[in-house]
Image (tube, rainbow, N blue to C red; front, side, top):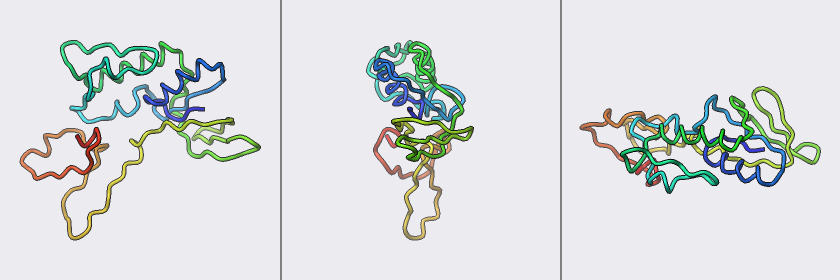
Length: 168
């Protein structure tokens, strides 16, 4: 079983298809696209499409732009699922994984599954972490998950914590 139908979950599914093993991908989202469908308005790939492909099927270039927008990634991920005919169950939120009878029990909001192995491909989007700020800081703290549009910060002093893709 793969938990999460974003990029990592789809890549795991691609390789699992080649093993002949029976598996399913459970994804909490009702639609394909992983976290890319929830990003801020200006979100783009940080590399050209040709370097952002998942295994087994290249991401097409985005016409006229070097760094494709999030909508292009969402469209690609949706097409990737169909292209590889991946067994995805949507709107299945996993609530717990526990050992049971020599295997694993995967509880979801709609029931339970049995699995001999679980791949967790949930990413970090759904559990954002905001570090504590010592002292008397009274400003606004915002995680990249909640950032929709940078225009709201025009003319303000802003500190970005973290140099990963979101911070950059």
